[in-house]
Image 1: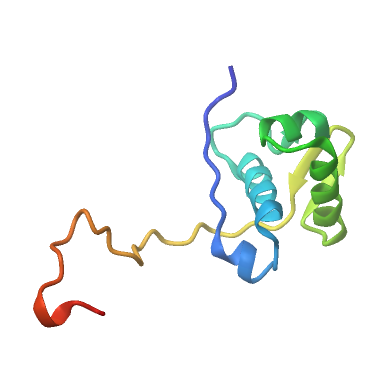
Image 2 (image 1 turned 135 degrees about the horizontal axis):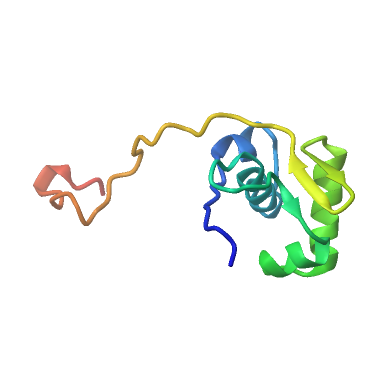
Length: 113
């Protein structure tokens, strides 16, 4: 069984790299594999078809996404190995949205509508 890891679609992937959501999801997954400290190998080792299966998309869609990411220079292919090329430190985990379950409800004049 594969070692667990997680990947995060960072806002810079959407805002600075101008990726569509599907592209950002694939890139984030590849970046997570490439930069993970817990995995022995770096990047994706396997076929594009297998990657499509893992990420629950069609092989043709995955091929289109990977081709766009490669054209933009965000990933590189080495035989059956795919790595991301742009690496940034994760965004600090500062909450920007209050969880409504953890704060008291607004009262009286505080109600925004």
